[in-house]
Image (cartoon, rainbow, N blue to C red):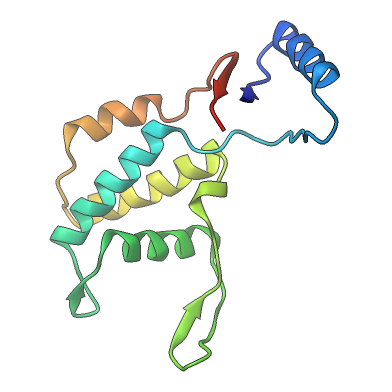
Amino acid sequence: MKRIFFLTSRLVRRAVAAAIQSAPDGYSVTIAPVTRTSQQNAMLWGLLTTISREVEWDGRHLSPEDWKTLFSALLRQQDVVAGIDGGLVVLGLSTSKLTKREFADLLDLILAFCSERGIEISPEWDERSQGAHSASEGHREVAA
């Protein structure tokens, strides 16, 4: 069983210390900023799907995945190199590794893009964005 703790209080920190003390040899511990929430992820893909249907870019409609690459490159001002078999390749940014704050910045970028182009956003995205910055409490267990 995989256990994930969110460091929100002294009580949770004590639970983490106890879990580390009781863990068998060979286990690992990682302490890192919280990454995107499921709300943020749902909002991202809803927005990208809407954009892919409504916006023509460079003479064609792009897939939601292609739009994600475009916006991710804008967020981090990524580098572009020549591809092995020609063409150009944007060097990597994985949105799954973004912190909640960075992911919120990405969503803000996308919402600004939509606003500038008059793209109508579903009201549910506005509701979800309200919770997109909130922190999770305590811990959860995940079947590995």
